[in-house]
Length: 199
Image (cartoon, rainbow, N blue to C red; front, side, top):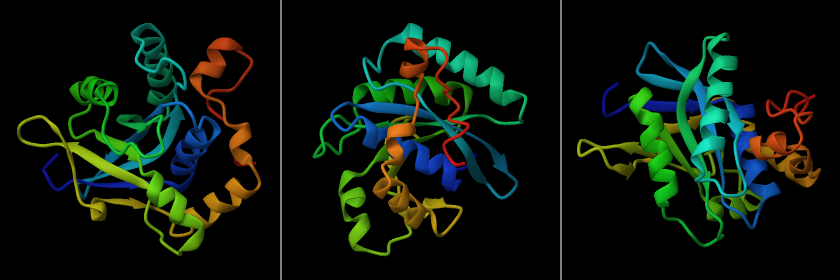
């Protein structure tokens, strides 16, 4: 993939990630992005899986989660194409070392992987405006193999109404229904796929 790869995230994948961050407002949270490369140098992010909200940098639970996610989504023709991170503090807009390290691990297997960081300022401004842009910052690897913030024009939400739907989900407190891998590891009856979230 070239330096000008574009990333298009589907509405449900996008909403799951934001709801996960809202459920755990005082914790750093993370997730993985699942998708495929389409013919026009665009990475299509079809789904996402919320991972952790406590001790997000621990390797053994991360490895277990990635293996289960890869096994499930490979059968659907999707692979891990990126990583999502939301910082613990509302005013923290820096990419943490944990986010960079996990992003590095994913980019070893998925060149051109995206790293998305929740932008709390955009999220806070969402009810006041009609902005259709995602409430996330996009980072990609540059030629020096470092994570670099790139223009917001390279990340779009596939469905233009995604932020309207997101606001509806927020007002109805749908974030309470999101399950991440932490929840699943505590109680295996909890569905880490969030199959019923959009029903």
